[in-house]
Image (spheres, one colour):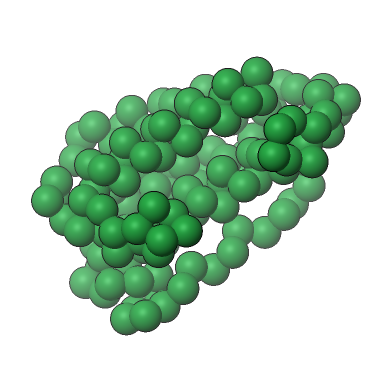
Length: 137
C-alpha cells in the first residue's frame, strides 16, 4: 500500500514541530489534554496500538499478541520525547500498513474506531495527525 508513505511524511512533520517546541509550549495545556506533550503522547499511543494490530495481521494473526490480544501501551518518556515517540509510532504504523494488501481487514478495537480496511486505517491516522497539528498549533 504505497499511500502509507503519506503517513510517514505527515507524522514526521508534526514530530519535528514537537521536537522544536520550547518547554513552555510543550507543557502548555490544550483542550482535552493537560499539555501539548500529552496530546502528542495520546496520538502516539493510538498510532502504536493501530500499528501493533496491523503488524499482527501482516504476520497472520488477528491482534497484537495473537487472537484476542491487546496492544501494549506506549510508555510516557516525558515531554521532551513527545516528538520522537510520535515519529516512531507513526513510522511503525506506516510500515505495517504498507505491508498489507489494500483489502486487508485490521481488527482495531472500538477505542480506535473499530475494524477497518487498511486504507481506512490510514485515512483515520492521517486525520488524527492533522487534528493534533491543529490542536497543538
